[in-house]
Amino acid sequence: MDTTKTVLIAGGSGLIGKQLTKMLKERGYSVYKLSRNAGKQGYIQWDPKMKTVDEKHLDRIHILINLAGANIGDKNWTSARKKELIDSRVQSTAFLSEIAAKMPKLTYYIGASGVNCYDISQQKVFQETDHYGTDFLSTLVRDWETASDRFQGICPYMKLRIAMVLSNAGGSLNAMKGPIKFGLGSPLGTGNQYHPWIHVDDLCRMVLFGIDQKLEGTYNAVAHCDTNRTMMKGIAKYMHRPFFLPAVPSGILKFILGERSMLVLSDLRVSNDKIKNAGFEFKFEPLNKALKALFSK
Ligand SMILES: NC(=O)c1ccc[n+]([C@@H]2O[C@H](COP(=O)([O-])OP(=O)(O)OC[C@H]3O[C@@H](n4cnc5c(N)ncnc54)[C@H](OP(=O)(O)O)[C@@H]3O)[C@@H](O)[C@H]2O)c1
Image (tube, rainbow, N blue to C red; front, side, top):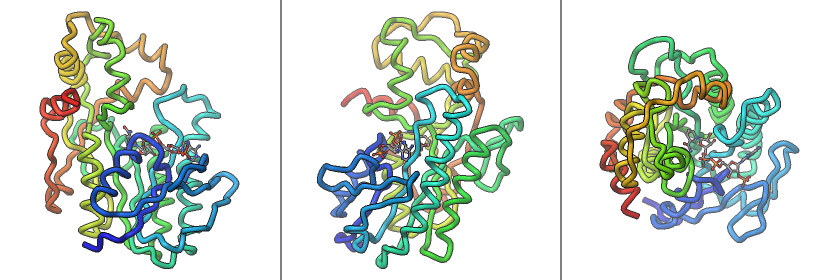
């Protein structure tokens, strides 16, 4: 491997980007982050909405990784927020494909997308070849991936359909820990719905694997799928907190979270056969192993 390569991560200031930066640097890569709030060393300023970018350093970039996007779980999905969730991904990705012209050394692109893109009305374990669903997130992912396809003819590229990322630096695990910390741990909805998940280090290892193998196409980034009950109970165990309360009814979650409740209520099982068949080995699965690693830090 050429360890002198330079990577640019759009949205590199976020949960995944921070850990990925660390792991890329450990592997000898030089890393820049594309941010709307640059200023610190190693950051490059851009404004994907206004289509502006500081062109300094772009001629050094060999690998471009796109993690940019307004946070899906943070706020209620009003129509204005939905527009922001879409634009911050689709327009940003399209703009990245335009500024790729200013990266003469660019040899590889990885675009993030999400695993919540399948037609969950079907009861099956979804493969990458299955159709998109028709709900808001599915169409968002479809349009986001279509924007990534603009890299066709620019360089080889991979699209990663990322599952719920488990990290002790924030994100979904933090949200699940919230009620458990106060002794209020319980399943959400029936608790029987499956959530695909991945440990943040495995996700970053998958990015490194993609770079090493120059993988092309779409891959589910999923270590395993477990029920909500299993996940909540497992987290409570590692937090040494009780887990006996009855499940929170779906209706209450729908009332509080609105359409966003699908993030916790939808029942989705997704296959990781494709990436395993490409030779990738997960380090943090099953769930117990991932949680043990996360809670031992
Ligand atoms: N974490 C998960 O569980 C998960 C699961 C599936 C998919 N993904 C996807 O993977 C990507 C990275 O996830 P993450 O958890 O690291 O996200 P994150 O912590 O929310 O960070 C995303 C980054 O995107 C940039 N961003 C935010 N709003 C933006 C906007 N309106 N326009 C352009 N850029 C914006 C921000 O960078 P600046 O403020 O520096 O510009 C931010 O640091 C996201 O696209 C996310 O949808 C994540």
